Length: 88
Image 1: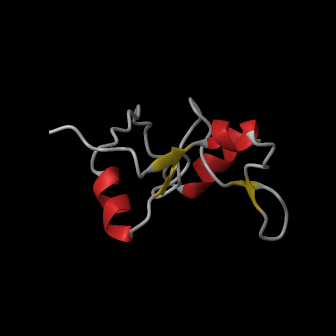
Image 2: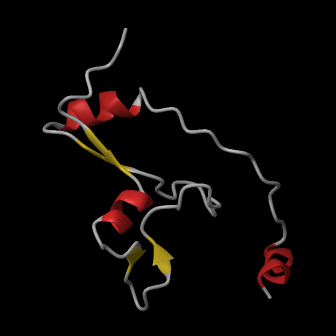
């Protein structure tokens, strides 16, 4: 059945930019994106691609079930030293 999205908002990195917000998590420096950009590369497991907001936790988790994320898998880089060669 169709999901009722009237009480749910899904925001992506493009939405942050549209409101003039920075797409960063400032830990020590502003070097970690808050959300993966549309068409960007997901660098690690659990990296956020969108934010779901709803009036209840249950509704947010139900909405998550109705979102399809299309991802092109990349090969793993093992050992870690091999990954360093990709960014230098």
